[in-house]
Every structure is written in C-alpha cells, then in structure tokens.
Length: 428
Image (cartoon, rainbow, N blue to C red; front, side, top):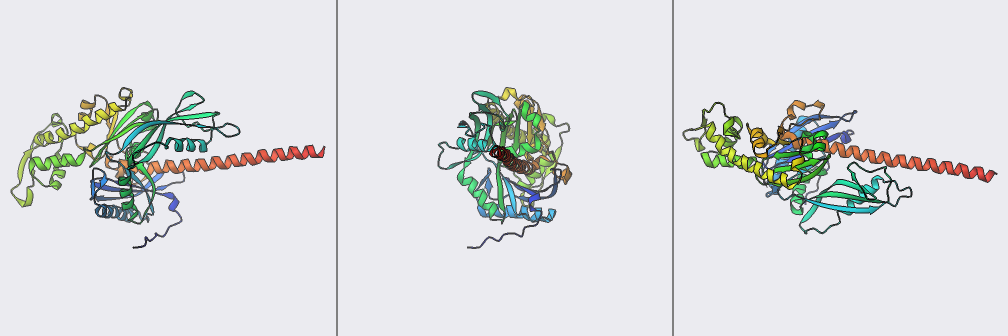
C-alpha cells in the first residue's frame, strides 16, 4: 500500500482558499488568497474534462481521480500555489431536504445564549432516524424560538432565555456517494476542508443578501444535474436536484443529427437557441459528419427545436420543485439561473415563459481582485461560491474564538473585582 505523501506547506497556507467543483462534464478549481481587508484575490483557475461521473455520482473512481488531479495541477501551475486542501461541492438528484426541529435548555448561570448553545442545538437536530445508506450533509436553521417567542431569524447569541428551539432544514445524501467523491479527492494528495452542497455554494457567488431576504429561487444547470434552491428571509428554505441537465441536451443533438458529441457541443454553444421564437435570422449551418463523411446541413431552427424540448423539461421539473417549497408566490426577486447550461441563447426567455416570473442570469460577484474577469461566467458559479463560503466559515470560526476569549477576559475581570472586594472586607 502506497503511503500518502504530504506536500510542503508554506507560511501563507492559511491565507489560501481553494474551491473544487466536481461536475459531471467538467472539473473546476478556483484558487484564491485572503487579503488583509478580508476580500479575496483569484490567483488561478484549473479546468479539466470530467470522466467517471454520472448525474453527479462517481461510477468510475480511477477516471474521476485522474480528472480531479488534472484540474488541480493546472490550477497549481496557473496560480503558482501548492494546493494542500480544498472545499468540495456536492450535488445530485439523491440530495434531500427534510424539515425538522430541536429544543434545548439554557444551563448557563446568566441564562445568556452562547455560541456553544447554538452548536448543541444543531447537534440535537441531527438525532433522528434515517436509512443506513443516508447521512446528514448540513443542518440549516430556519427560525429560532426563545421561551415561546418565535419570529427570530438571526442568530440569538447574546439574548436571554431558558428554553431555545429551532426549526431546521436537514440536508441529506447517500453515504456511498459522499464517501466515493471524498476518496477520489484525497487520492490526489489534498485534504478536504469542507463538503458543501453546491446550490448553497453557488448562491454565495450569484445571489445577494437582499434577494435571499425578499425571496428568490435559483436554478443551477450543470452538465449532469440541475440543482434548485429556494431562499427566503436570508436562509435556504428548500433544495432539490433533478437528473436532467446540459449533457442530455447535447445527447439529444447527437441522436437527432447523427453527429459526434464534440460537434454537438460545438454547435450548441455557437448556434444553439433554447427558444425557436428567439431566432432573428434562421440560416443553414454546416455540421461535421462522423468519420470524415460529407458534411451535413441543418438550420438554426431545427437545432433550436431539439434544444427547446429538453430545456422545457428542465424548467417544468424545476417549476414543480419550486412549488414544492410552498413559498413560490413569495419569491419577490424572481428566479436566478446559472451554471453552464444557462448560457444557451434564449434560456432566460424560455425560463420566464415556463416559470411565470422574472428570471435573471447569475454571474459570480463579490470579488475585488485577481482574475475577476476570467471567472465572471456562470460556469464558475459553484467554484467561486465554494471559495466565498469557505471565507465566511473561517470568519465565523474566528469570531467564535474571539467571543470565547472576550468572555474569558470578562470572567477573569469580574473574578478579580470580587477578589479585591473580599480583600477589603478582610481588612475591616
């Protein structure tokens, strides 16, 4: 058995964040550095074709590992940084969202709710019966209730209470799928900082806090799966995945026109429309035949009919999932579409027609330096989002540590005051 060699670590490793988006058709790596003002610079990008996955699930670990390694090596070359650890995105139609609740008592002497109490509340929520093949990916608080007072949507740390409750969404996935992906990543000699649900990651790069508060839906159209997420009052209310996405659109073109997959992908990008009615100039296009045969001729409108049929399926199924969130009428910011599949011309218009609400294209934002222009593309939504999510997690950990230190200092100060008072009494 080969021993895993640890890479040499540099003094600035703690300033480096790496997002690893393992998609069905492509692997994307985003390398970023945290600046002194807590913003981030994008240092490098790595991309590689993805092999060994089907609808977000690893079906050939060796091929998947090689694909991930190729993307990591390109990212290291482009950024000049040795990658030691990554935040990994996970998605798939096996992801489930379960509503639950938990309750704890506050046993602090001053009855002030602390970060430790929130952590205990989350752990309490995880105690539930689940199938043996299922594991919890994340627990997302929806609302807090203190001593019967509800409507608390921000963290209640610092508030007074005796009994603390939380309504939560529990995100679950298949143990085997998560383990298979994790093994493929660690086989590339990198550690895993975090495993993040891809719709949550993408939301950090393409949605702002106002949209999440007033209500917004997000559809991330990838290669193997399309992921739906619904936000309201600043938190994730519902998520689901469907097994129809960009590669099925490409496969439909392959079968309908009898051409290679690479040629189908090319004409989809260059001439494809998601709605026939959006074509202003219907012209013939030349399509390369298989094995060098005589080139074929088709038209933009024929290609668009093929694409539109499958894209309709994606948005009709997405509409059902948005309805399942039970707050579809409260999405005042409409729907944001992102991912590589959103780049087909006319996709926004088709989505608006089927969903019956305003639709916008989601492009990664929230960046201030480095290769900003290079990642301003929906295909990098998850990769950039993983970096921004990791930054927030690190900030939360730092804030928690500072709060603990401050409480300890405060406790020592109070202890010192009481000691002095006791000395005064002893002297009387």
